[in-house]
Image (cartoon, rainbow, N blue to C red; front, side, top):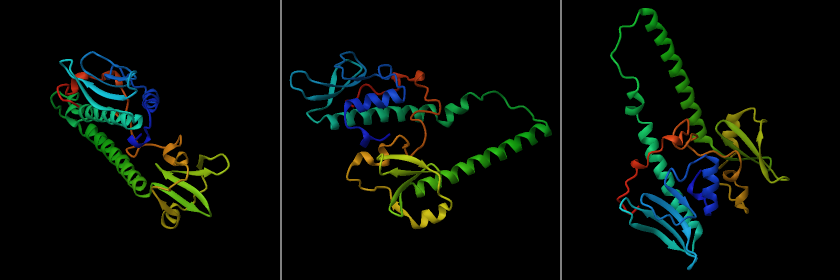
Length: 236
């Protein structure tokens, strides 16, 4: 999900519901003029009808990031902050130091059989990693729109999709036999320029972010969210 797909406060709520985000635990308050310290939020001022994006700092003082009538701009400002807070924790909790901390303990001498088993396991892991890298490279290089015989297609994560001109929606496509031919001859680009932007593949049910993974970690374990990781003393 990208910032450009957020056009309103309701879009933030929909994304949060889809990702099962506990927003209040994450200290994000949508459509609420929350007064307590350590909070980010957005609401519409009932008197002026302006949209207000704010941060309540650790000492309870408030810094307004935005105040104005552009709901889309306001929603994107808050969503961008939500993304940055998620990435901050993703980097922290997925760091090599943290992932290696649980292994601990002293080293034990392994038997030749155990060492052989370990070697096979490492080889298997390397094979899987190489395959994943090749797949990711192929997707990053060839991801985008394709046009063949006046029909529109899209390639993502090793899968093909086609645009149904009757239902005006995207559907999986399984008719590509020679991908190299398609990559060479039918590639259109990463942007198609629809007259109606809602037809863009980015808005389909099949679209995935470029990183292809969960926002925080592989388990999307929001239960470990620690509000103390945020710098609450800054204005934003």
